Length: 45
Length: 183
Image (cartoon, rainbow over all chains, first blue to last red):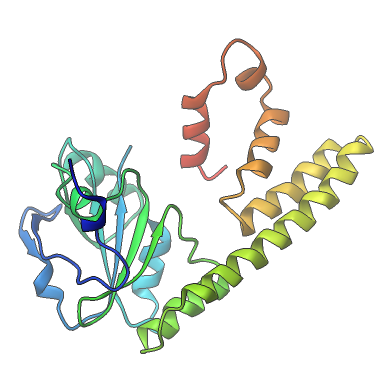
């Protein structure tokens, strides 16, 4: 079972990730370091 | 999505917008959506819910504002209506170094809730006097400023579409399509 307290909260460091973009290339979250980011989660459904 | 496109194009707000599509089916479905929305936002696909598990959310949409030092400064689970001037101003100020204060958001939420309820009362008076169209017009204004107010939103749906509510079962699939259309 996942420990709920391990979820990302205000004040935590945002976790790094590497995932593909819609254009096919891999995106590393760390590529954006130094910028303020609005990360918007959505879905087509 | 279109609202975040607007934000990314607003030169007075200095942030990068990344969108994450939580589509298990992969690229095609979100790509179609992005094309329809004429979006050129950086969009990644999280087919395996990797970030959903890390961040701990169970539904979308959600917004996370992350500072330049990678600290999460603000989380909103659900709709974040950045078209609202006060909220947009908070994001703008945050982008230029001011702290994003939850208390400001709470005050803002209370303010729009009160405004929406005042409109609801005005509409109710029209409704009680038999002016249903007038009431709905005012209630629509209320949900424009307070999109999360499902009490008002669903009153409109139930009046305009009684068959979706009172004939057989409540039609939740139809309700979801209404939400997608922003109705």
